Image (cartoon, rainbow, N blue to C red; front, side, top):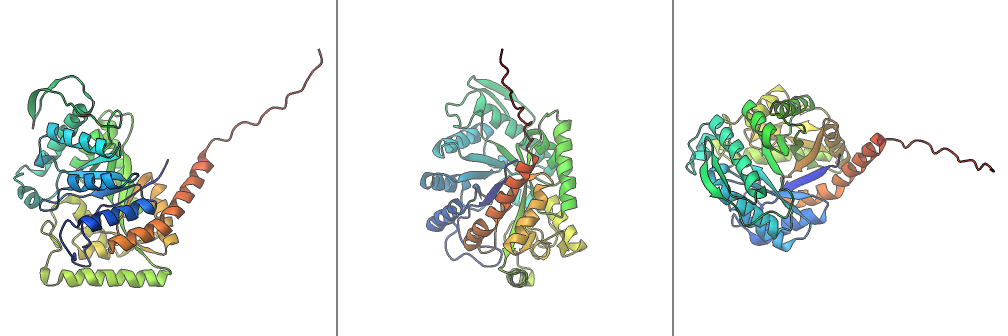
Length: 379
């Protein structure tokens, strides 16, 4: 199977280790970062969503008009718009980007963050809503005849869109989560299921949970699997580990005195299952498998993609290949110095992984039967 790499479509230069230097939407930096990904072998970038953050759809549209190849993963929360309106927004963006859009639907794992934009549903209710929302969006993308809908969360009549995606039959749908409700919803409707980086054994168990949910939903296919990491690279192993410890020290400095890195996430008592899993894994140990390191997750309260892969480019590439052998074919990676780390990862890690994946695929290809030598016989 092919392998893909997802970076971050950041709109400013801030990260967990340092505050941003300018506005939350720095147009020049946004384009510079996206261009660095395009020029260094990445497939797509994520434009993330936060209740007070710049609108990711508009940031993505801006980048799409400036770059020709880089694909877009647009994060979207179902609580912020009606699904028929969202479907038109996505189809328009797919038109603007000439068919380079994938949509990542965020259910929301923290009640407080959801309530900032008026969403007071429970977590299980949110997953139910997201599944219904995705089904409506898919139908709006593909139906050229008016249709009605009456479900648990949405009701409308006689809708038909006049804008359709370039991609046929539709763009891919991405989905993430680590709870049984997430596996159930994403297994039923997602083309891509996203996980945060965990030890290999834990990841294998999650992949099986997603596949079981897809089978339970009656699917004959299963979602592709994406896993996210924070790479920390060095020219030698010692230099990589020195950098890793400096990184955690910088995070701890920013969170000293109980300060949070964002208004969305608790450092000690996260509500979402994914962050709880990361903290539980960190409590089990600092290092797992070939290169997985948990103190970055522990220092941030398991906030989002926060477990690191530490080592030389060769070590980190081999660690990613271990996940590839489990069935992961999309890798999300984001460094702490967002721009420079994107360039280094693209230069030094991505080529190794692509080359090794090509070798694996070639080794699995069936060997053609030998050709029988033809013998001419005089009649």
